[in-house]
Image 1 (cartoon, rainbow over the protein chains, first blue to last red):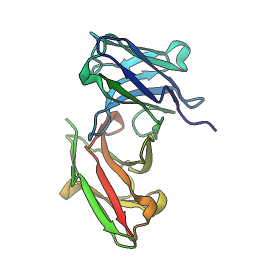
Image 2 (image 1 turned 30 degrees about the vertical axis):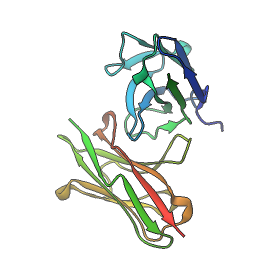
Image 3 (image 1 turned 90 degrees about the horizontal axis):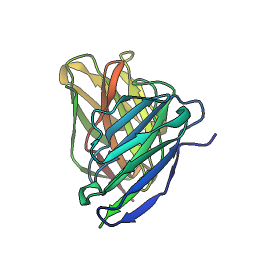
Length: 114
Length: 113
């Protein structure tokens, strides 16, 4: 069974440019998460989806970040415009349900903003 | 609010030695606790989890952790380190059966031959 797929794996952009990350979760997983992992830190949740619905986006900086999960399967996270402080690894995870269910993580997208 | 503190950002052990990675949590409700491992340039993988059943939890790759409510701890141990255990380890907590994962800052484990 394929794991969580993310693309691209690496992205280098200049500040003020837009960038998008794509995630395809494990088949059948209803819950999808986007995390940001800064250097030397643990992942921090940006947004959680239950099927198509964003049920927790309280940590998503909505002035520049947006996300969508059309048809409740794959998802896209966008930053526009990017800032230097957005340099981080963006992780996508999926699970059968929330909280006590195991989350399966993708390999992440390493974003560098110059 | 839930939080996690991992003592020691770097731990180094010799191959065959005991591995002990420390995690203390803060939670206003009975927590669920998790240990994840992250190998370089990879996502996180679940090692084990505590969800209010047995306090001694056994996970993959020979790791185990014990939930101690009186000490608010959930330390990760392995009797004998292997070179392949070198990775970064994250402790995480949720608000019982609800809530999102709150991760610690991680502990990088090095294993010396």
